[in-house]
Image (cartoon, rainbow, N blue to C red; front, top):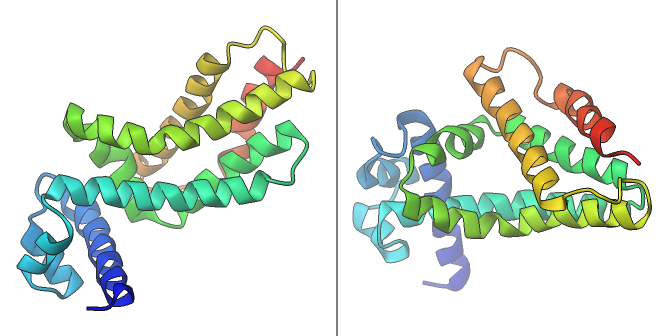
Amino acid sequence: MTSSKKKEKYDLILDAALKVFAEHGFHRSQVAKIAREAGVADGTIYLYFKRKEDILICLFREQLGRLLQLAHDAIQDITDVKQALRTICEIHYTHLENNVDLAFVTQIELRQSSLELRKEIGIAFKPYIELVENVLHKGIEQNVFRPDLNVKLVRLLILGAIDEVVTSWLISGQKYSLAAQVDGTVNFFLQGIDQ
């Protein structure tokens, strides 16, 4: 099998897994359901993944990688650190609003995972954490954000708030626009960290 065919099948399996995990929950999703959704034999899954947990880790890594790349590319030429934070939040909310299955898996299913699995996912999340921390450090250097800012704590608060806003949106049944929450989220934080 050519490497492009392998990549195509790998992506097909991850797309199917996302749909199955979102619909049935990670713990109630059998590999056979994922294979059926992907249109492949059960054994084919095991050519790419050793266990179901590996599918979830790879899914998260791939999807978070896309989100991180979108955010990184979008803020690359932005010199205004406040706008950079707003852009990261906007991309995060918009990306998840446009992919509800991904939102369900990342917000609901990952919380019900084992500690070992969450640690693996934490490693994949580290570059996203660093992206936010870099914006905060830059804001301090530019005298836009307070010099006494505890960057790690503020980063935790920002990402925690973003996370909670997405979770609340899901639990509400997506009755409102997630992307419309960007200004409220970012303005709340800017009032606390502005110089």
